[in-house]
Image (tube, rainbow, N blue to C red; front, side, top):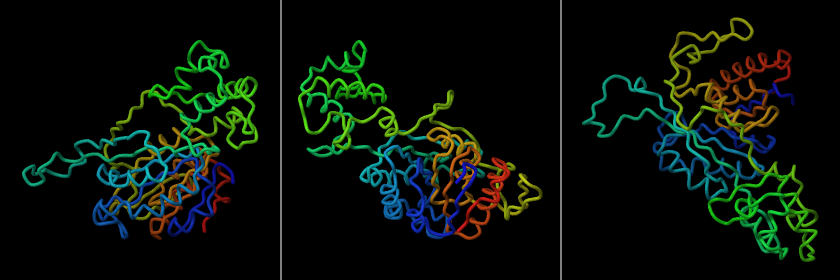
Length: 348
């Protein structure tokens, strides 16, 4: 598959996960518990059960560096968060989409709603929890690094000598407090070489993930999720809901290659996400050629962004009308990213 291709599954994502390659990131924009579509729950309390089989599939197919972007309301996310934690997904941060006062239609009767009007939703970033399997059981990375050094019987301060630093190795890499810092692969290689040269003899090499050889620096770096920092961007994103030309209305029609020409009918989707936001989250945690999953495609905005940025998009949509719109958007995005890609797109 080339970087400008996409794979659209028409049906439930649960039937597609096993055929998709492991994701570098997952963009989840599914049930909100607001009866927003056929199959949505009637309240947020039921969302954990709705997502449970999907989270199980995500967990089984993820690689150590997989990330998850979970879109929802504040209370919807709160109900699913415990499930994600229990399933091995660690919270990183919450992005708040501030839609502004224009999001409120007409006047709000404060005495009736008895709360401040809601103009936001959230997109929460998770990382796949990485644990190390050892002869004595599983350990977190932080615990394992110190454990391996101590298992070698070498004083902690010698880690600085091994890494060629003044005190960063013991203060950051081997500490057990909140100042702990994930060491780069080069430093793990240095710790491993020093420990295996100067430590006690052992049948299980020090700093080995498989019991055969110490972990290589390049392999170690692949265990942590990617992060491409975007200066000037915080965790509060301000933009009104889509009411411009990007908002799809009725049936999407193609007047000419690379041109969107929506009808003047009502909005095709009640909660269409801005491509600007989807591009932002795809850029943050992936590189060109990486695999992006969007299991609840809708209009496939996340996958459109992924294709435009040269990633491999795998998207599912159970609603036939939305799948038609998604396919046309994806085809246009692929053609724009690579004119020859339109003939290579797959659709099952």
